[in-house]
Image (cartoon, rainbow, N blue to C red):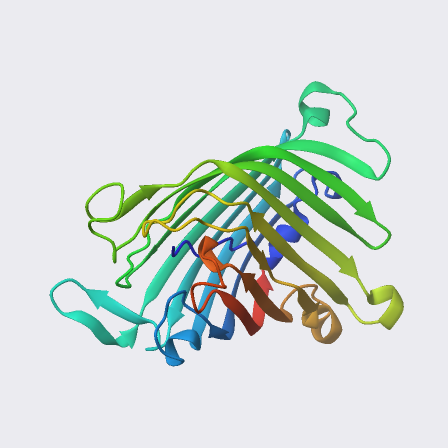
Length: 294
């Protein structure tokens, strides 16, 4: 299926509630360039070598009850992933995709005055969120997803690790499928399943003297029933390890104005498709990006 998975942008690293002061707020914008993206089931090498220019805006804040994170990506593909129009077919140009994501954490420590800290856990929050996506390809994805579950905040010597354990439910569309789907036109509701989100940040400044961070996320979605084609989904793993340099601090004495970064998008069983049976379901896609925090 074509749910472009999480856009947990680099700023999602700041969702450890206990690590930020009350009233903290951050808004940013950026762009990244990625190549070697792949499309499950694509019949040609070109369709498994899609270049994407991705613009992102996002916001994070700490409130009286927890944290809020919101991100919107606009993804512009080259012609290897063509736009599609009913009646005219694939165009000579690339597709456009929009993906929005929200994650909110509610801290029982703040709301009820209790203490959820123990061992390496600095806090346990209730996390809720959702994803929404659409793209003008022939597949015509129309993803909607909801997540809910605990998030475990773990302090590291020079950073943190967050682990979200969620119930996950997804709705989508399969524009290729007409007669094999739940409804004509390809609308499908997947089975509710478990999802795990790992988000981390570790500073190498103490080791290198440079404002250099290793950060990223890994998202794991367990099998969610059958696709619109009737095949069983598999456990899906998406990871984006990232090395980020605070160029603003180095050159202008203005932290994060901007940051530059290099990441690699690693994807196994993309969109839940079995990579041993469907081509284009394993991806290694390097990306360069720049991000400015206002």
